Image (cartoon, rainbow, N blue to C red):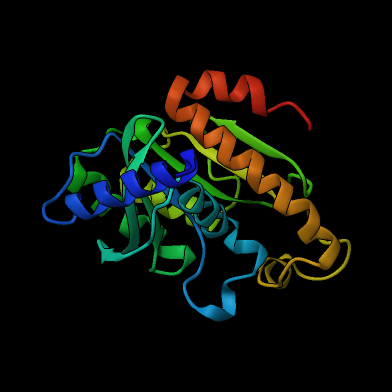
Length: 212
């Protein structure tokens, strides 16, 4: 049996075991987006899309719905984690994040939020230990519900439209050329999350905030 298959089986077994009771969580990783098939490929859903890649890499599945979110749970980089996709729609994401942070007793510094950023070009990612919302309504909601902005975040660049309304732009799918680039970006994002889990935000920033 290949090493990847063994790892996948171990993670699936651990996930099934945890489902018998509430796990002790060391990290909460939240991807932002809008629920529903019509939004799945949108630029605004890069948080969901990144989590799908991360879950696939570690043999996890989004098999639970709780705290207004779809959840996958297991172990990544030696830590017990929950991956969460809020199902509240983007602008109310804080409702789900606040519930999960309180229920699982996760400190703010152990919550990583992944989301789209108009001010970063397609192909770039940026990690920060804290900061403002930058006008992102999902992040604004999370800050309001947590009452703080001191939690790590991973921004995935989607670029600004040359013409047209940014609101329409973020709710459109990536172009075929952008999709080629963003697929590579998601691999970098997964690696950045893994390094954050293993070595912390400073190490992840030092390696992945550099332009590719």
